[in-house]
Length: 422
Image: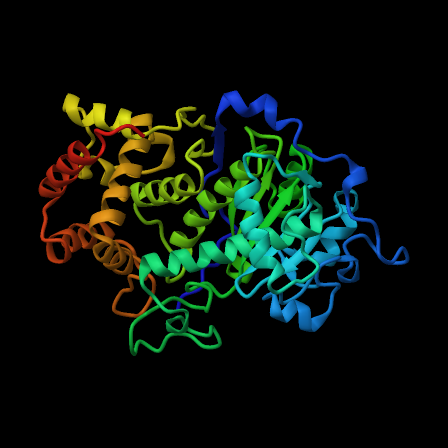
């Protein structure tokens, strides 16, 4: 397959987390003071050395049981964890590698609030099954525990995406040789079609994010950033907590889910061309809101300000759009050329159309994603030039609807299902 030789380019544009304003002040009290952080087990070693982890202790057997591949020593962004530790030493990044992700976690301890207690206890209960030193009823999550918790969460999101696209992990190539034009093209590597694992870096401040992005990619942004590391065929996400309400655990969980949905869609059968904006924003909203509808992220183009809302209830404004006759049509959504064109009605509509497909036509959604990703030309090179026509034909052949018929079916479904209170 053809390898891109252009310089590293943004996998997508920045995602702006606009989160419930009523919670912004409350979020400021959630970060636990340094005294609540885990004490060093071995003072002769760095704070992020695997032996310092009070849950897996860097023990190979415990790590394997928990699905942890390593606690560092892997390539990350344009360098590796050792090099990043050297120039970001004050951030104390805990590194954790899972079967499908490489994660750097530099956030502080977090108090468990009454509102989040049930959810977090259930998640920690699962962790405790493989890491006996995890205490599900703990009132504070130290950085190591939070790192393990996010490792579990992102692997859950990976499983959810495979369920949505209805593909087994074994269907993706190993990545050790190019496609020989036989069989179905599923990308260039084992990670949904990418050769490299998905990467995530959690940082505690805007300053840390700006420093990392400037040094790694020459970027000067202050918001969450998704990026395509072409040299290693990896898609990376970098976030920090000094935006919106991302100090709130549920907000950060949803924000990661939103951005990983975008990453997964682009990486599916290899990131070689862009697929429709409406699918990206719609699925990202749908997955994030399934975690907690009170916190919502919004994409925009670089340098632009996203049009956002602090509303948690989206059925009502969507219903109003449909009843007023101002609802957007699929043909309009397919004409979108970038996130800069997204208005509130686009966010409500793309989320709702995805809600409709996930509820009524999940099989078609899987076929749609299968059909528009991994397009190739006669020479076997990735080629998305005919994507719009493929998209239209799939609606006709797999769903039995023209765009106009789909619009009508979606509007009818909204009228029948969004009338009740949220």
